[in-house]
Length: 333
Image (cartoon, rainbow, N blue to C red):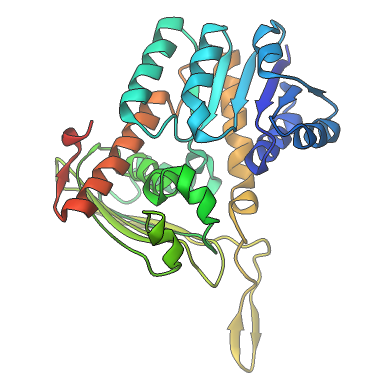
């Protein structure tokens, strides 16, 4: 049986997920909803589906699942609404900017018995998954240290930053989830420092554009995260896990992986320009995983709880920056 999906939000990430659904043989895109009707119509025309309202999608018993790609401020309300309607839910991160609101939302999901998967797409990147597989296979022994580099090619508009929750809840949150994915232990303490080095307007909006974070587990393992809103050379995405018997890393990816040798040395093509192309395979794989969750009645992963913990790490990091000290995750969670 082909599962029928509705995409809520026809922006750039909505387009990415719509394409992944359309390419999946076990799924079909039935409807698109967006307050910007022209955007909804354009996406619907691309995939040959209907333009609907939230109310119509909620009432349509033929739609099995929704993909929530709307602004963060709407996520928790929509999750609760569609959980009560008996539909499976995939929601882009974060569930909300408030830990209390996320906890309340997850309570509604649990009471309804609905399935909720949170969009930490990097777990599904084939290169990052290969790093995790090498760890699981014992190739590097016990993981001791993890390094994550995540730098955007340029800063988003200040208007976006003002509603996104800031760099820690919007950008670093992916790295918090990846740290847990690779460490395989829960971070218990966080130390973070941050600056405004890229755009003074970001600082005026109360946010940062350059962040360094160290996460530590109870056993002493730790992960260092380096974030910047500016990388003149492209979308910088690298991870490394160091263990008792060796190390494994995933290097930057390029649209074309060639190397040219000449008199001036060796050159390679530029990196991907941003997440829409760098993580295209990851987005397709996570939607495929969500389809499998529904078809096989399996537990979603990443789950709502994963979203809660990643947000707690972001809050702990922000507290560390503000207070200039090591913060226990238990202080915020």
